[in-house]
Image 1: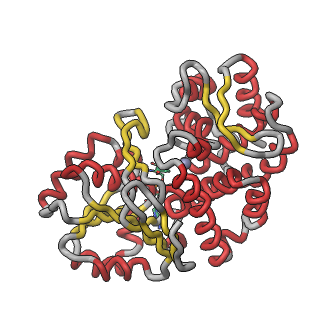
Image 2: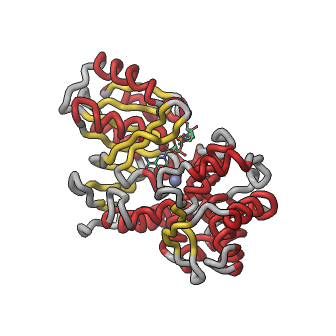
Image 3: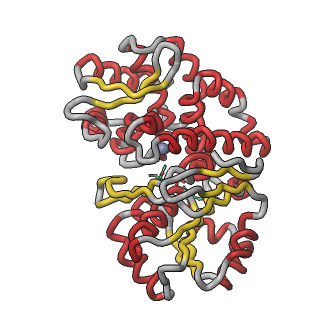
Length: 359
Ligand SMILES: NC(=O)c1ccc[n+]([C@@H]2O[C@H](COP(=O)([O-])OP(=O)(O)OC[C@H]3O[C@@H](n4cnc5c(N)ncnc54)[C@H](O)[C@@H]3O)[C@@H](O)[C@H]2O)c1
Ligand SMILES: [Zn+2]
Protein backbone atom coordinates (compact mmCIF):
# COMPACT_ATOMS: atom_id res chain seq x y z
CA UNK A 1 0.00 0.00 0.00
CA UNK A 2 1.13 3.55 -0.76
CA UNK A 3 1.47 5.76 2.35
CA UNK A 4 -1.27 8.37 2.45
CA UNK A 5 -2.54 11.15 4.70
CA UNK A 6 -5.33 10.32 7.18
CA UNK A 7 -7.95 12.04 5.02
CA UNK A 8 -7.48 9.62 2.15
CA UNK A 9 -7.04 5.99 1.30
CA UNK A 10 -5.09 4.73 -1.71
CA UNK A 11 -6.31 1.54 -3.39
CA UNK A 12 -4.12 -0.45 -5.76
CA UNK A 13 -5.84 -1.87 -8.85
CA UNK A 14 -4.90 -3.48 -12.16
CA UNK A 15 -5.32 -0.06 -13.75
CA UNK A 16 -3.10 1.65 -11.20
CA UNK A 17 -3.72 3.22 -7.78
CA UNK A 18 -6.72 5.44 -7.08
CA UNK A 19 -7.55 7.68 -4.14
CA UNK A 20 -10.57 7.76 -1.87
CA UNK A 21 -10.69 11.24 -0.38
CA UNK A 22 -12.70 12.10 2.72
CA UNK A 23 -13.90 15.70 2.43
CA UNK A 24 -16.41 18.10 4.01
CA UNK A 25 -17.52 19.94 0.91
CA UNK A 26 -18.02 17.26 -1.71
CA UNK A 27 -20.22 19.30 -4.03
CA UNK A 28 -17.73 22.17 -3.88
CA UNK A 29 -14.94 19.77 -4.86
CA UNK A 30 -17.02 18.54 -7.74
CA UNK A 31 -17.75 22.09 -8.93
CA UNK A 32 -14.06 22.97 -8.72
CA UNK A 33 -13.13 20.33 -11.32
CA UNK A 34 -16.29 20.58 -13.45
CA UNK A 35 -15.87 21.61 -17.07
CA UNK A 36 -17.15 20.79 -20.55
CA UNK A 37 -15.34 17.45 -20.55
CA UNK A 38 -17.18 16.22 -17.45
CA UNK A 39 -20.46 14.30 -17.85
CA UNK A 40 -22.32 13.72 -14.60
CA UNK A 41 -24.76 10.85 -14.12
CA UNK A 42 -26.85 12.08 -11.22
CA UNK A 43 -29.33 10.31 -8.96
CA UNK A 44 -32.53 12.33 -9.54
CA UNK A 45 -33.37 12.30 -5.82
CA UNK A 46 -29.92 13.66 -4.91
CA UNK A 47 -30.37 16.27 -7.66
CA UNK A 48 -33.57 17.51 -6.01
CA UNK A 49 -32.29 17.35 -2.41
CA UNK A 50 -29.04 19.18 -3.17
CA UNK A 51 -30.22 21.42 -6.03
CA UNK A 52 -28.54 24.56 -4.67
CA UNK A 53 -25.20 22.87 -4.11
CA UNK A 54 -25.27 21.46 -7.63
CA UNK A 55 -25.96 24.74 -9.42
CA UNK A 56 -22.35 25.45 -10.36
CA UNK A 57 -21.77 21.83 -11.40
CA UNK A 58 -24.74 22.13 -13.79
CA UNK A 59 -23.37 25.40 -15.18
CA UNK A 60 -20.01 23.87 -16.08
CA UNK A 61 -20.63 20.18 -16.81
CA UNK A 62 -23.41 18.24 -18.53
CA UNK A 63 -25.79 16.21 -16.41
CA UNK A 64 -28.01 13.17 -17.00
CA UNK A 65 -30.55 12.65 -14.22
CA UNK A 66 -31.57 9.07 -13.47
CA UNK A 67 -34.31 7.65 -11.26
CA UNK A 68 -32.22 5.20 -9.21
CA UNK A 69 -34.45 2.12 -9.19
CA UNK A 70 -33.18 -1.33 -10.20
CA UNK A 71 -34.71 -0.93 -13.72
CA UNK A 72 -32.29 1.97 -14.32
CA UNK A 73 -29.36 -0.48 -14.37
CA UNK A 74 -31.06 -2.82 -16.80
CA UNK A 75 -29.25 -3.44 -20.09
CA UNK A 76 -32.18 -2.14 -22.16
CA UNK A 77 -31.73 1.36 -20.67
CA UNK A 78 -28.19 1.68 -21.97
CA UNK A 79 -28.91 2.76 -25.55
CA UNK A 80 -30.63 5.86 -24.18
CA UNK A 81 -27.68 6.70 -21.90
CA UNK A 82 -25.23 6.29 -24.77
CA UNK A 83 -27.33 8.37 -27.15
CA UNK A 84 -27.62 11.15 -24.60
CA UNK A 85 -23.88 11.18 -23.89
CA UNK A 86 -23.09 11.32 -27.58
CA UNK A 87 -25.61 14.13 -28.04
CA UNK A 88 -23.77 15.96 -25.23
CA UNK A 89 -20.59 15.71 -27.29
CA UNK A 90 -18.86 12.96 -25.30
CA UNK A 91 -15.29 12.18 -26.45
CA UNK A 92 -12.80 9.48 -25.42
CA UNK A 93 -10.79 11.87 -23.29
CA UNK A 94 -13.88 13.08 -21.40
CA UNK A 95 -14.79 11.76 -17.97
CA UNK A 96 -17.96 10.25 -16.51
CA UNK A 97 -18.87 11.12 -12.92
CA UNK A 98 -21.39 9.09 -10.89
CA UNK A 99 -23.25 11.02 -8.18
CA UNK A 100 -25.53 8.68 -6.24
CA UNK A 101 -25.59 5.23 -4.66
CA UNK A 102 -24.81 1.74 -5.93
CA UNK A 103 -27.24 2.01 -8.83
CA UNK A 104 -25.58 5.12 -10.30
CA UNK A 105 -22.21 3.50 -9.65
CA UNK A 106 -23.11 0.35 -11.57
CA UNK A 107 -24.47 2.32 -14.54
CA UNK A 108 -21.49 4.67 -14.74
CA UNK A 109 -18.85 2.00 -14.11
CA UNK A 110 -20.33 -0.24 -16.82
CA UNK A 111 -20.53 2.65 -19.30
CA UNK A 112 -16.92 3.59 -18.48
CA UNK A 113 -15.83 0.03 -19.32
CA UNK A 114 -17.47 -0.18 -22.73
CA UNK A 115 -18.06 3.35 -24.02
CA UNK A 116 -15.51 3.97 -26.78
CA UNK A 117 -13.62 0.90 -25.46
CA UNK A 118 -13.06 2.44 -22.07
CA UNK A 119 -13.07 5.93 -20.56
CA UNK A 120 -12.27 7.40 -17.14
CA UNK A 121 -14.87 7.65 -14.40
CA UNK A 122 -15.04 9.23 -10.95
CA UNK A 123 -17.41 8.50 -8.13
CA UNK A 124 -19.14 10.74 -5.59
CA UNK A 125 -21.06 8.14 -3.53
CA UNK A 126 -24.13 9.45 -1.70
CA UNK A 127 -25.41 6.35 0.14
CA UNK A 128 -23.80 4.70 3.13
CA UNK A 129 -23.65 1.39 1.25
CA UNK A 130 -21.67 3.00 -1.55
CA UNK A 131 -19.41 5.05 0.75
CA UNK A 132 -18.54 2.20 3.12
CA UNK A 133 -18.41 -0.68 0.65
CA UNK A 134 -19.16 -0.59 -3.04
CA UNK A 135 -17.14 2.53 -3.99
CA UNK A 136 -13.92 0.49 -4.08
CA UNK A 137 -13.46 -2.89 -5.69
CA UNK A 138 -13.82 -2.12 -9.40
CA UNK A 139 -17.03 -4.08 -9.99
CA UNK A 140 -19.94 -3.05 -12.18
CA UNK A 141 -23.09 -5.20 -12.20
CA UNK A 142 -25.93 -4.80 -14.67
CA UNK A 143 -29.35 -6.47 -14.85
CA UNK A 144 -30.76 -8.19 -17.94
CA UNK A 145 -34.55 -8.48 -17.77
CA UNK A 146 -35.30 -10.20 -14.47
CA UNK A 147 -31.74 -11.52 -14.06
CA UNK A 148 -29.93 -9.29 -11.59
CA UNK A 149 -26.24 -8.37 -11.82
CA UNK A 150 -25.59 -10.90 -14.60
CA UNK A 151 -23.38 -8.64 -16.75
CA UNK A 152 -20.40 -6.86 -15.34
CA UNK A 153 -16.85 -5.69 -15.57
CA UNK A 154 -13.88 -4.85 -13.36
CA UNK A 155 -13.38 -1.15 -13.99
CA UNK A 156 -11.77 0.84 -11.18
CA UNK A 157 -12.63 4.53 -10.82
CA UNK A 158 -9.99 7.23 -11.24
CA UNK A 159 -11.00 8.77 -7.91
CA UNK A 160 -13.64 8.54 -5.17
CA UNK A 161 -14.81 11.50 -3.07
CA UNK A 162 -16.58 10.68 0.20
CA UNK A 163 -18.56 13.42 1.96
CA UNK A 164 -20.56 11.88 4.82
CA UNK A 165 -22.59 15.08 5.14
CA UNK A 166 -24.87 13.89 2.31
CA UNK A 167 -25.91 10.86 4.37
CA UNK A 168 -28.08 13.10 6.58
CA UNK A 169 -30.94 12.86 4.05
CA UNK A 170 -30.86 9.06 3.63
CA UNK A 171 -33.99 7.11 4.62
CA UNK A 172 -33.62 5.00 7.75
CA UNK A 173 -33.85 1.79 5.76
CA UNK A 174 -31.16 2.91 3.28
CA UNK A 175 -28.93 3.87 6.20
CA UNK A 176 -29.36 0.41 7.74
CA UNK A 177 -28.74 -1.16 4.35
CA UNK A 178 -25.28 0.44 4.43
CA UNK A 179 -24.73 -0.69 8.02
CA UNK A 180 -25.40 -4.25 6.82
CA UNK A 181 -22.28 -4.11 4.61
CA UNK A 182 -20.30 -2.45 7.42
CA UNK A 183 -21.24 -5.31 9.76
CA UNK A 184 -20.23 -7.77 7.05
CA UNK A 185 -16.67 -6.53 6.54
CA UNK A 186 -16.10 -6.23 10.27
CA UNK A 187 -17.31 -9.82 10.79
CA UNK A 188 -14.84 -10.89 8.11
CA UNK A 189 -12.02 -9.08 9.88
CA UNK A 190 -12.82 -11.15 12.97
CA UNK A 191 -15.07 -11.51 16.04
CA UNK A 192 -13.47 -8.66 18.02
CA UNK A 193 -13.83 -6.29 15.06
CA UNK A 194 -17.53 -7.20 14.72
CA UNK A 195 -18.07 -6.81 18.47
CA UNK A 196 -16.41 -3.40 18.37
CA UNK A 197 -18.64 -2.07 15.60
CA UNK A 198 -21.67 -3.68 17.26
CA UNK A 199 -20.91 -1.72 20.44
CA UNK A 200 -20.90 1.47 18.33
CA UNK A 201 -24.13 0.57 16.53
CA UNK A 202 -26.19 3.45 17.99
CA UNK A 203 -23.30 5.94 17.72
CA UNK A 204 -23.11 5.40 13.94
CA UNK A 205 -26.23 7.57 13.69
CA UNK A 206 -25.52 10.12 16.35
CA UNK A 207 -21.78 10.69 16.16
CA UNK A 208 -20.33 11.80 12.82
CA UNK A 209 -16.77 11.11 13.97
CA UNK A 210 -17.63 7.49 14.76
CA UNK A 211 -19.40 7.15 11.42
CA UNK A 212 -16.46 8.53 9.41
CA UNK A 213 -13.97 6.37 11.28
CA UNK A 214 -16.15 3.27 10.74
CA UNK A 215 -16.55 3.96 7.02
CA UNK A 216 -12.81 4.45 6.67
CA UNK A 217 -12.08 1.23 8.58
CA UNK A 218 -14.64 -0.71 6.50
CA UNK A 219 -12.97 0.45 3.31
CA UNK A 220 -9.56 -0.41 4.69
CA UNK A 221 -10.63 -4.00 5.47
CA UNK A 222 -12.07 -4.32 1.98
CA UNK A 223 -8.98 -2.69 0.43
CA UNK A 224 -6.71 -5.35 1.92
CA UNK A 225 -8.87 -8.13 0.45
CA UNK A 226 -9.35 -6.67 -3.02
CA UNK A 227 -5.68 -5.82 -3.35
CA UNK A 228 -4.99 -9.52 -2.84
CA UNK A 229 -7.66 -10.67 -5.27
CA UNK A 230 -9.20 -7.86 -7.32
CA UNK A 231 -10.80 -10.30 -9.78
CA UNK A 232 -12.62 -12.37 -7.13
CA UNK A 233 -10.96 -15.69 -7.91
CA UNK A 234 -10.11 -16.69 -4.31
CA UNK A 235 -9.68 -14.64 -1.12
CA UNK A 236 -12.25 -12.02 -2.19
CA UNK A 237 -14.99 -14.70 -2.25
CA UNK A 238 -15.24 -14.26 1.52
CA UNK A 239 -16.88 -10.87 0.87
CA UNK A 240 -19.95 -12.87 -0.11
CA UNK A 241 -20.66 -13.55 3.55
CA UNK A 242 -24.43 -13.09 3.97
CA UNK A 243 -24.79 -12.67 0.20
CA UNK A 244 -25.77 -16.14 -1.09
CA UNK A 245 -28.65 -16.23 1.38
CA UNK A 246 -29.21 -12.47 1.04
CA UNK A 247 -29.50 -12.57 -2.76
CA UNK A 248 -31.88 -15.53 -2.52
CA UNK A 249 -34.03 -13.52 -0.09
CA UNK A 250 -33.96 -10.44 -2.36
CA UNK A 251 -34.96 -12.56 -5.32
CA UNK A 252 -37.69 -14.54 -3.49
CA UNK A 253 -39.25 -11.28 -2.23
CA UNK A 254 -39.06 -9.55 -5.63
CA UNK A 255 -36.49 -7.14 -4.15
CA UNK A 256 -38.89 -5.83 -1.50
CA UNK A 257 -36.05 -6.24 1.00
CA UNK A 258 -33.19 -3.77 0.24
CA UNK A 259 -29.75 -5.23 -0.44
CA UNK A 260 -27.92 -4.51 2.84
CA UNK A 261 -30.97 -5.49 4.89
CA UNK A 262 -31.17 -8.81 3.03
CA UNK A 263 -27.43 -9.25 3.64
CA UNK A 264 -28.03 -8.71 7.39
CA UNK A 265 -30.69 -11.45 7.35
CA UNK A 266 -28.30 -13.53 5.22
CA UNK A 267 -25.48 -13.27 7.78
CA UNK A 268 -27.84 -14.19 10.62
CA UNK A 269 -29.02 -17.13 8.53
CA UNK A 270 -25.45 -18.21 7.69
CA UNK A 271 -24.60 -18.17 11.42
CA UNK A 272 -27.76 -20.07 12.34
CA UNK A 273 -27.34 -22.71 9.64
CA UNK A 274 -23.62 -23.15 10.42
CA UNK A 275 -24.44 -23.71 14.10
CA UNK A 276 -27.25 -26.08 13.19
CA UNK A 277 -24.96 -28.15 10.97
CA UNK A 278 -22.21 -28.20 13.60
CA UNK A 279 -19.78 -26.18 11.46
CA UNK A 280 -20.01 -23.38 14.04
CA UNK A 281 -21.54 -23.06 17.51
CA UNK A 282 -24.83 -21.60 18.78
CA UNK A 283 -22.73 -19.19 20.89
CA UNK A 284 -21.23 -17.65 17.72
CA UNK A 285 -24.69 -17.20 16.20
CA UNK A 286 -26.10 -15.74 19.44
CA UNK A 287 -23.19 -13.32 19.79
CA UNK A 288 -24.04 -11.61 16.52
CA UNK A 289 -27.81 -12.10 16.40
CA UNK A 290 -28.97 -9.03 18.43
CA UNK A 291 -27.05 -6.57 16.23
CA UNK A 292 -28.01 -8.24 12.97
CA UNK A 293 -31.67 -8.52 14.02
CA UNK A 294 -31.73 -4.84 15.06
CA UNK A 295 -30.37 -3.99 11.65
CA UNK A 296 -33.06 -5.91 9.74
CA UNK A 297 -35.91 -4.84 12.07
CA UNK A 298 -39.06 -4.47 10.03
CA UNK A 299 -38.10 -7.36 7.73
CA UNK A 300 -38.11 -10.08 10.39
CA UNK A 301 -41.55 -11.16 9.23
CA UNK A 302 -41.08 -10.54 5.51
CA UNK A 303 -42.65 -13.43 3.62
CA UNK A 304 -39.90 -15.46 1.92
CA UNK A 305 -41.50 -18.19 -0.26
CA UNK A 306 -39.27 -21.18 0.45
CA UNK A 307 -39.37 -22.78 -2.99
CA UNK A 308 -38.35 -19.50 -4.62
CA UNK A 309 -35.64 -19.04 -1.99
CA UNK A 310 -34.19 -22.51 -2.71
CA UNK A 311 -34.29 -22.12 -6.45
CA UNK A 312 -32.50 -18.73 -6.22
CA UNK A 313 -29.90 -20.22 -3.86
CA UNK A 314 -29.19 -23.16 -6.15
CA UNK A 315 -28.76 -20.89 -9.19
CA UNK A 316 -26.20 -18.65 -7.41
CA UNK A 317 -23.38 -17.94 -9.87
CA UNK A 318 -20.77 -18.82 -7.22
CA UNK A 319 -21.88 -22.48 -6.94
CA UNK A 320 -19.59 -25.25 -8.15
CA UNK A 321 -21.37 -27.96 -10.11
CA UNK A 322 -24.29 -29.12 -7.99
CA UNK A 323 -22.64 -28.10 -4.74
CA UNK A 324 -23.43 -24.83 -3.03
CA UNK A 325 -20.57 -22.48 -2.29
CA UNK A 326 -21.38 -20.76 0.98
CA UNK A 327 -19.54 -18.37 3.29
CA UNK A 328 -19.96 -19.53 6.88
CA UNK A 329 -18.42 -18.92 10.31
CA UNK A 330 -16.47 -21.69 12.03
CA UNK A 331 -16.42 -22.50 15.74
CA UNK A 332 -14.06 -19.56 16.45
CA UNK A 333 -16.19 -17.16 14.42
CA UNK A 334 -13.73 -17.06 11.51
CA UNK A 335 -15.58 -16.52 8.24
CA UNK A 336 -14.55 -18.69 5.29
CA UNK A 337 -15.78 -20.20 2.04
CA UNK A 338 -17.12 -23.76 2.25
CA UNK A 339 -18.74 -26.11 -0.24
CA UNK A 340 -21.83 -27.91 0.90
CA UNK A 341 -24.32 -30.38 -0.57
CA UNK A 342 -27.78 -28.95 -1.05
CA UNK A 343 -29.27 -31.83 0.97
CA UNK A 344 -32.27 -32.33 3.26
CA UNK A 345 -30.38 -31.45 6.43
CA UNK A 346 -29.21 -28.15 4.94
CA UNK A 347 -32.67 -27.28 3.60
CA UNK A 348 -34.35 -28.04 6.93
CA UNK A 349 -31.90 -25.73 8.73
CA UNK A 350 -32.69 -22.94 6.23
CA UNK A 351 -36.42 -23.43 6.62
CA UNK A 352 -36.18 -23.42 10.41
CA UNK A 353 -34.29 -20.13 10.31
CA UNK A 354 -36.88 -18.51 8.06
CA UNK A 355 -39.75 -19.80 10.23
CA UNK A 356 -38.34 -19.30 13.72
CA UNK A 357 -34.82 -17.87 13.61
CA UNK A 358 -35.49 -14.25 12.71
CA UNK A 359 -36.81 -13.16 16.12
N1 LIG B 1 -20.84 -2.75 -8.04
C1 LIG B 1 -20.72 -3.07 -6.78
O1 LIG B 1 -19.64 -3.33 -6.28
C2 LIG B 1 -21.94 -3.12 -5.92
C3 LIG B 1 -21.82 -3.52 -4.59
C4 LIG B 1 -22.95 -3.52 -3.78
C5 LIG B 1 -24.17 -3.13 -4.32
N2 LIG B 1 -24.26 -2.78 -5.63
C6 LIG B 1 -25.53 -2.39 -6.21
O2 LIG B 1 -25.92 -1.16 -5.61
C7 LIG B 1 -27.34 -1.09 -5.50
C8 LIG B 1 -27.69 -0.76 -4.10
O3 LIG B 1 -26.96 0.37 -3.73
P1 LIG B 1 -27.55 1.51 -2.82
O4 LIG B 1 -28.13 0.97 -1.58
O5 LIG B 1 -26.51 2.56 -2.74
O6 LIG B 1 -28.83 1.90 -3.66
P2 LIG B 1 -29.37 3.04 -4.57
O7 LIG B 1 -28.36 3.62 -5.47
O8 LIG B 1 -30.59 2.46 -5.16
O9 LIG B 1 -29.81 4.13 -3.48
C9 LIG B 1 -30.82 3.84 -2.53
C10 LIG B 1 -31.83 4.97 -2.42
O10 LIG B 1 -31.23 6.10 -1.81
C11 LIG B 1 -31.49 7.28 -2.58
N3 LIG B 1 -30.38 8.18 -2.28
C12 LIG B 1 -29.10 8.13 -2.75
N4 LIG B 1 -28.35 9.06 -2.11
C13 LIG B 1 -29.18 9.73 -1.25
C14 LIG B 1 -28.98 10.77 -0.32
N5 LIG B 1 -27.79 11.31 -0.12
N6 LIG B 1 -30.06 11.21 0.38
C15 LIG B 1 -31.27 10.63 0.21
N7 LIG B 1 -31.51 9.62 -0.63
C16 LIG B 1 -30.47 9.18 -1.36
C17 LIG B 1 -31.60 6.76 -3.98
O11 LIG B 1 -32.32 7.66 -4.80
C18 LIG B 1 -32.36 5.46 -3.76
O12 LIG B 1 -33.74 5.75 -3.60
C19 LIG B 1 -27.85 -2.43 -5.97
O13 LIG B 1 -28.26 -2.33 -7.31
C20 LIG B 1 -26.64 -3.34 -5.88
O14 LIG B 1 -26.69 -4.41 -6.79
C21 LIG B 1 -23.16 -2.76 -6.42
ZN1 LIG C 1 -23.45 -6.41 -0.93
